Length: 365
Image (cartoon, rainbow, N blue to C red; front, side, top):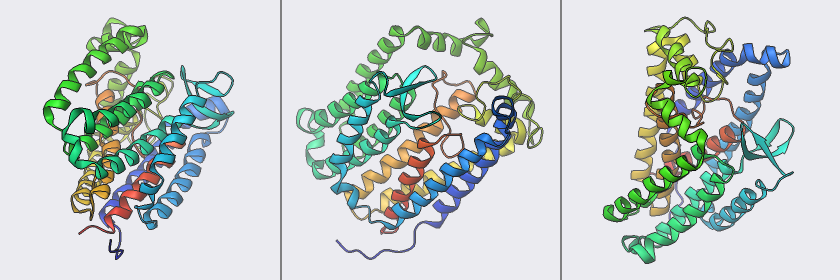
């Protein structure tokens, strides 16, 4: 394969850096009150976010300049390593419980989230597998069932933590790859019915998930319990109006909206910057997704095309779920807004993945 490459997609780089910069500003604005109350340092969260952003941008530069074909070589090893981490995190005394889920490995407040690594590893592995066996993907038993079995195993381990949000993002991005590779719609439709039945079972098996569904349908039925976050999120977005209350002027961050720097940071952004600010960040994500899909279409080989679809799928699914939750169109799931919300391993891993996408853009036809 020819190795001639051009400059990476500048539209994509600009969109990524602008979203990241807005995210850093909003993490500080959303978290300053909470950080001062809990740690006596209003810069506590933003300093950590700056550290992970710097690590992530460094990783993005490395992966942007490393030929994406090397990931095909290490796809199986990476997937097995992530399976090992998912098993390790379930061991009492090793896995760290945060927010009711045993999802972390680390010491004190520093740690990594293996499920975040699994999202990227799964995308790379499926891109490799389906690019090599694309002709068989139309056959259910030979082509479709094996990748779905691997995907189901990873999802099962993530659900044992439990972490439905991360699992849903992985499933969504993976199904985009499988569909793009040529899977039959009737096969995927049948599996969707099975998936809906399984989702109903998962919701019924955990009372807190059922509470989230009922709170989504009528948050005012339990305004101080399951519906609290949704109501407070709408209380933030509503007063923002067209231009917002002004940067730093949020009222909901004063211990009304829980964890405003993570899952509900878009609420604070909309409150302070208004409809214009919210529309601007959505537009930037739109540019990123557009250039990412353009890269997938113009990739020089099937592996590159499927890998690009998977990476942009991770971003798209996560943005859709997060904003859908914040504006009350989806039940609360615990999904952060990519590149904007506070987070360590999620931010670093996403920037690493976007570096791979930028490298694919360097070989676009």
